[in-house]
Image 1 (cartoon, helix red, strand yellow):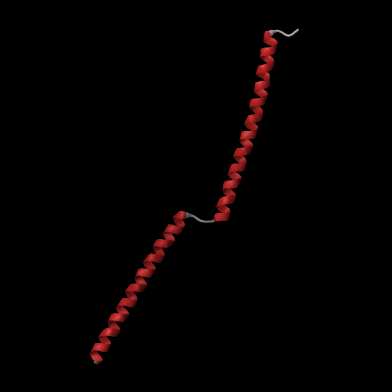
Image 2 (image 1 turned 60 degrees about the vertical axis):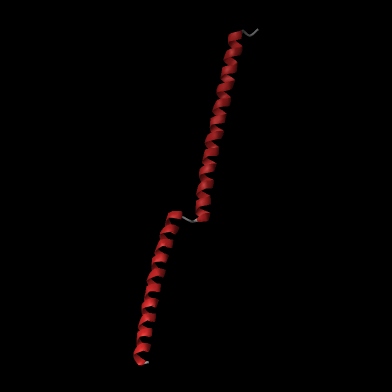
Length: 84
């Protein structure tokens, strides 16, 4: 015959076992999530900070080229006026 205390202790032990298993599952799932995030980053390979920096650099280079073309156009226009 089991007593209330025996039943209670068995229930607590069962809950402790379930809790330990759930913790293992949670830890394992956390590890899987971390691995998937690393995989996603490796596949995407895109850093928004780097891309923004590159975009700003390309914009500056474009602006500089546009200024060079504008100056060259003005110089050509001046030469044509001198000749004409």
